[in-house]
Image (tube, rainbow, N blue to C red; front, side, top):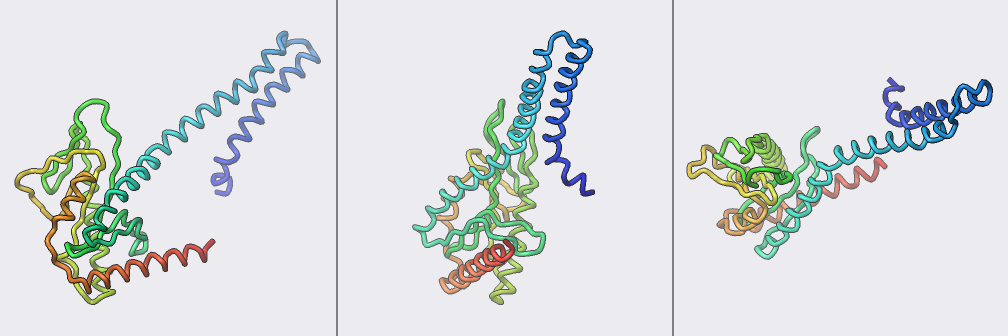
Length: 247
């Protein structure tokens, strides 16, 4: 098991050692028996082999890292959009730590008179063919190219339920009627059915999301907004202290 964990680190060393062994063996064979007539070819094997190996490794790292970078860019873009809500009296939080063990973080949270909005950001590259749009009927969310994105709906519902239970326990107030789960896809157009099967979750692009939140009627008192924001702030600070203590 220990070898398995160390294998990714040892692989570059093993490959380079193997290449060095091939080149050294070729030169040694040439000097002793003269069976390798072109030693300069052996000299080329080491940098050529190293280049091929490095190219494959770097290409793989780029492929694996691209979704992570894309996600971070999307979350930042949505965060900047949400800052506009501050002019409407909202408090905006980003990257709220999990409220349960093994739970999921909350990408963004907007709290104000219009309610508590739990926002899950999903950043997707534009398709090579087809339109940059999705179709939402309240239960399923499908891209124009046929790819199903409905898992995002279930994810934001679960995170919202965790937040509802947490707030209820912290404040002795049930926020069920005030919490709105939202899944947003920056840069995509969401076509909504005229008759949604389930109206609980909003599926919107980032621009429309901010407009919808800002236009929501007041349903939460200033006192409750302040108490919720205080608890969220305490939660974030406590999590940061715990993280710092583990370093």
